[in-house]
Amino acid sequence: MAKTASAVYVCTECGNETGQWVGKCGSCGTWNSVKEFRGGGTVTAGKRKQVLQVAPALVTLSQST
Image (cartoon, rainbow, N blue to C red):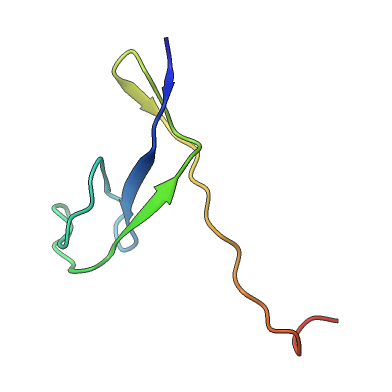
């Protein structure tokens, strides 16, 4: 049975994924590049299937028409 994964942490420099937040990416060694993504991931039979949801960029009122 699949259960919803609460969060996945992805390095913005190299794309390495971890199950918990770390200060330094274990793959590329970049500090403070690991960001949290919530929802969309499911864990099934030990394999992770993920759909990352990224918040859209903010637009100021003067930029919108």
